[in-house]
Image (tube, rainbow, N blue to C red; front, top):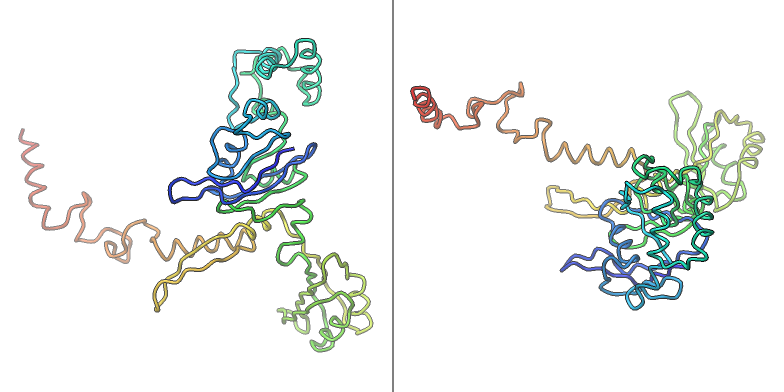
Length: 347
């Protein structure tokens, strides 16, 4: 087990990791998620003893990484994105080398290496040079996967830890995290009928917390969002309530939240806006990837024109104005520039 308690890392006035606490249990695969700069690499480096923490402790199988570094490091292995391997060794030679570094007893070394190769399915590769292996084979066997590539995490991890600005913002299974996300308990409907009749019938259904009714482009049809209590499946009850109200359901969808949406919602994004009253700063959550993209596009439009230069130096056609020449000099400097060029030509 790995126990991380109140871990802090400061660089001057900057806090890279801010009182981080979690536990890693044996036999599970954990996804360690966060945007760039969230503190993932710093945390991993402190766990492995590569850098010291400012505050807090890391205990690996009962051994403090700073007080008993050799004993603690015997219990773990650290695999960065670019594996630090000796490429001219074979797989078997390298595993023997690592076993010696870990001080594995000689009478157990051969058996342990065979078990490990069988576990990660590289027995057939044992006599192949490491430089000839694929990147995936070079990286075999991971317990904590630190990444911002969400498809990797979704595919292999039993448990997810999400950090943002050095703080832990979520810690649970991917399934349970889905229940925490906004809209995860929503049911979306298209129903034909009278607005008040539809609303009254749905609000009477057990487990329904709120009903939002909006007119759809189709005549006499309404787009409805039904908010439900946690872990409540009300689809069947909703169906029969609409039958009894003589309001046919044209479409019904349960809201399924992806790991990408959860990640974007839980990792806080700060943005600063300017309005007539001056500077205004606030905190917001992007509900979807589309929202994040829209925000970035709007931000770019507000700050930098498509041509990347100050707007005042361009006319409506997008060409450089008379005030600024192709060589970048103002008009009043052109004569001296031209003269110097002529002198160079004469030389």
